[in-house]
Every structure is written in C-alpha cells, then in structure tokens.
Length: 193
Image: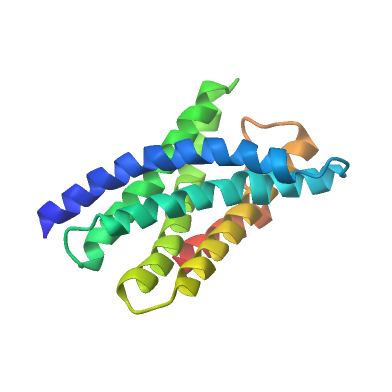
C-alpha cells in the first residue's frame, strides 16, 4: 500500500542521482568512442542529440528503473509507477540544476527548461518503465524492455535535436523556445507514456 509506494518514491529519488551520475559518465564515453572525427555541423548535432544526450541519459535511467524494479516490496504496479515517476522527475530536476549552474540567464533558462522539459523526462521514464514492467512482471520479453528503451531514446533524441538545432541557428542557448519539432516530440512522448 502507501508504505511501499513511499519507500519506492525514496528509492526512485535516490536512483535518479545514480542515473544522472551514470549519464555524466556515459555521454563523454560514447562521444570519445563513437563521435565522427570529420562530420558536418548537422551530423555533429544529431550525434550529440541522439547519442551523447539521449542514449546516455535513457540508458542510465533504464538501469535505474531496472534496479528499482528489482527492489520492489510488492508486485503492485502502482508501487513501481511511484518509483518511476521519482526517477524521471528527479533526473529532470538534477539536470536542470546542472544547466542553471552554467547559465547566463538562469531565470529564463530555469523557467523554460523547468516547465517544458520536466514532462519530457517524466514521459521518457514512463515509456521505459512500461517496457521493464512488461518484461519483469507481466510475462513479456526482454525485447519489450529494449523496444521501450529505443522508443524513449528516439523521442528524447528528436526533442533534443530540435532544441539544439534552434540553438545553433540562433546562437541563443539560454532561452531556446520549443520549435515545432520539439513541441511535437514532447507531445508524442507524453501521449505514448
């Protein structure tokens, strides 16, 4: 019941710290190993959006969700959902703190990224959580978990690519508004979750 859900929220919050730490290691590692040496601006942007950011963050979050699913007290899906929400939102909040630390216009960046990307991180976590739940508790296959992870990576990557391309085109990184592609990517992530 409620005690298990509160415990899962606490585990989720703790695992969000693990996931952001893993993402901070995976992103540079993936870049060092796989980044194209000679590439156009567009190719570098897509690599950054889909690999350095999306694959690293979603893989780290997936690992945290897997650990969360193994630490469940009950087999109640509501317990896992509470923890998955904490992992997704916790990751989003911690990432925003990191961005704010380096921002020139922290108020604009905080308002924009806090309001617009927090639902994205929650949605990506819920997409991955659905696949993990299917595999671990609903007689699904490991393929279900991988497909959900892949979908989360794609949704996250499309959102990041849209925002990053706007930032590159305008030179403004502290107040990048949602472009059409970013809006629809975020909308799709929320709808799918």
